[in-house]
Amino acid sequence: MHPLKLAPAPKGRQLRVVSLLSLALLAGCAATAPQSEAVSAAQARANFARPVVLAPDDVRAFAAPPAGFDVARPGAAQGTVAPFTYESAVTGTRRTANIYLPPGYNPQQRYPVLYLLHGIGGNEHEWHWYVRAPVILDNLMADGKVAPMIVVMPNGRALPDDRAPTPERTFTPENALGFALFEQDLLASLIPAVERQYPVMAERGQRAIAGLSMGGGQALNFGLGHLDTFGWVAGFSAAPNTSPASLAAPARLLYLSCGNQDGLINVSQGLHRRLREQGVQHVWHVDGYGHDRESWAENLYHFAQKLFRPSH
Image: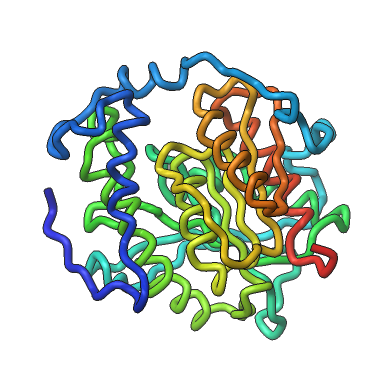
């Protein structure tokens, strides 16, 4: 395991190291399994095949997007995606994120900002190339359906070696540790670096966070744990690293989604029901997919249209 250079945790917060232990649930292992024990990809995949039990309210909140919503349009204005490097106080290294700048980007204009987090086997390129987030946003902006925004797609694995792991390393405690440590990396290193380099608005109401799978759990944990920092929070197909929610103050928008063919839907169902019991307003959207790219692309399409609007 690589040595880690840790900076002090933000005042009043502790790193959610317990979240990495919940990967044992993702892999179907007992909670008492030793941390040093790696789990197989086959064990983890088996958990996705668990029976799905739906409740009456586990239904779509939105209609499916139109055909071609995630396909580049010939002649349409396109944003740009560029690498962005920053010094991490957590890893002691320079780390890389991808930054999406909207069509017609003007460095003299100030923009709201969305942080998009990837899954357990991905990296900063997953939202860009696999889910095609820039294309989805370009098309929405061309149709006037979303506010122009800057989007940060970071590497959510805060380790000195933060490369996407090989299959045998995906479900190891070390890989999970990187996702837990990213909370501090995001808050203390990445966000300040982005705000120094780009004209993003620093107000809570102009900053959003969302993620898919493992990144969905991160987005919910970090967003709901730091509502003074994030006003808009979403988890798509959130993995078992998701912590129980207890909200002292509401988000401007809290958005939960999962597919009705996804063996991990029980994670999002449980959070939805807890929020409902607490009387916390939120969106609950259940589409017809499994743990798939199509679900994540559609939910970005829906979530982006709700962002940074005064009515929410």
